[in-house]
Every structure is written in C-alpha cells, then in structure tokens.
Length: 202
Length: 213
Image (cartoon, rainbow over all chains, first blue to last red; front, top):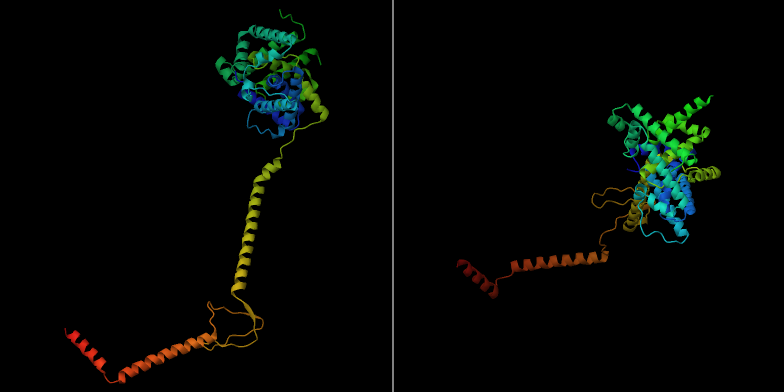
C-alpha cells in the first residue's frame, strides 16, 4: 500500500497550514504521525537507538523552524524525510563516521517495509514487544464484524476514499465513516489494553 | 457532567481524529479538535495509537509502542519558544512590481548614460571640427550676393575647408593657368597667319590623297 494517499495528503495539508501559523498542537499531531517512519529512515544511517532518536528530534525541530518555506510542491512527508536524511548525514559527518554505502532514496525509504531492518537494531525486549503488538492488532482486526473489517481494510490497505468505499459497499458515506471509526476504536481498545499490560499476548 | 456524557464527548472527538486521519475533516472541525487537545490530553495518545495501528497493519515502519520523540520535540519547542519562520507574503505580492520597477530604472539609467555618451561624443567632434574664434564686430559681405551678414560679439563658428590651400599657391596656380592659356592662344593665332611651308604643304597633299582613296 502506498505511504501517502490523497486523503493522507489532505490531512497533512490541514495540519501543516495551521502549524505554519504557529499552532504547535497541529505540528505535534504531525510529529506523532510520522515519528515512527522518520525514525526508521534515520536508523538506516545511525545504528544506536538513542542517537537515532536524538537525530529524529533534531530533524523535527528543524522541520518546524523551516515550515514556513514548505510550499506544498511535494508531499509533506517527502519534504520531512529529506530533512531527516540530511540531518542524519550531517550528524555522521560531524561524528566523522562513514555514511552508508547505499544511497537511500527518500521516497523508497518512506514506502518500503522498513520494519525488518529496524528490528535488527532493536533490543530483544523491544523486538518482543513489537511482535506482540502486531499479534494484538492483527487479531483485533480479524475479529472485527465483517462490515467494519471490510470498510477498515479498504481504507487502510487500499487507501480508498470514503466515497469509493461507499460505492463499493453500497452504503451512504456517513455509514462508512461510522464503520471505519468503530473498527478503529475496537482495535484501539485492545491495543491500549495491551500497552497498559492488561492483555496477555499469549 | 456525568461520566456517560464525558464518554460520549470523548467518542465524538475520537471520531474527529479518525476523520482527520482520512482527510475527511473540514476546517471548522479541525479547529475544534485542535482546541480540544489542550483540555483532553488523551486525544494525543489515541492519535498515536491510531497511527501505530496503521503502521503495523501496513508494515511501513517498526512498531515502537513507547516511542517518545513527539513528547521530546513538543517540550523542546515549548521550552525554546521556537516558531516557524514565516514566508514574507508581502514580498511575494510585491515581487513582480519590484522587478518591473528595477527594469524600468535600469532602462532609464542606460538611456541617460547613452544620451550622455552621445552628447559628449558630439561635443568632442564639434569642438575638434568647428573651431571657435574670437571675432570683432565686423559686417562681412557675402561674396556672391553681397548680402550683409549680421556681425556679433563673442564666438563665431567658422567652417574649416576640407583641404586648406595657402593663398600664395593659389596665385601661382592662377598665373600658371593664365600663362598656358596665353601660350595656346599665341600658338593658334600664329598657325592661322603663318604661310604654308614645305613641310606643311607636303603633309596637306598627303592627307588629301589618302582622302580621295
């Protein structure tokens, strides 16, 4: 599935416009949204987990300060990942380390499955937690009622708009909107419980 | 407010988060949601989990449930008071006018420079080609029509002849031409009044015979 659908870009545009006016809450939502993907890109340059998080933090702060220069010519995540890549390279130069011999394309890095590579660098505990979280999420989605699961999967995996999903399922848009939300809510409850240690992964 | 009402309100904003994820939220609802974030911090956590779930489902990045980069960034930005450097919209609006004004100024400057160069060049040529002499208030006569030319004090421009010839040379040339003319007239008159000689008679006869043939 694509990393940036049209609706995703619309969501970013709404938040970016507000962040450009100095609304820190809007930028905070963007950081929360992209922190995992940005960290995945940076971890290809910086092996150490703590250092990678520092570089990611610096990247986001640079992005916030430079947000006024973002004109929307490209997708926000492409612009953001370019900043992250440059920050990581500069960090390596400053530390007099060798940059990776592979030239990582920003778009590829954003779209391809970076989970496996990242897991190589994680601690065993983090890797186990990550795997357990995946189990919970997949199980929760599989246990959703058909209409909720179908609507959610068409949105998440196929990136379809509400209008397209409504046309496919033969329902009003309001119904699709509600089904997708209820599907997310059901999965989220189980994930929240798992993260709070209330659920036994086994 | 009862807990049931609280739950309903929270659910309402959770749904707004879900719609924002899908780009289905209008401007007004987005503003409502952002304002609500201050009163209901749990919305940040919900937003985080929604995206975490999506990342895991799509496999676009590793799932790190305890990731706190956003918290650190937020604290840093609040602490430093950093703000995005705003683009100067007024400059964007005025830029075309500024360019046009610059071009116009450049054109005027170049025009003035060219005009100045031309004036100085022509002045140089004039000063070198047309000398100015101080003259007395005399009333010279036009040699052809004897028409009076008004005289004036000050500088009078006098056209220089292309090839100045000294006056003495002119008199000599005139005398030479007159001498040639007198010589030719003398030779002609002499030839007309001189009797036919042997030589001239012989030649005349020879010519007459060749004409008959």
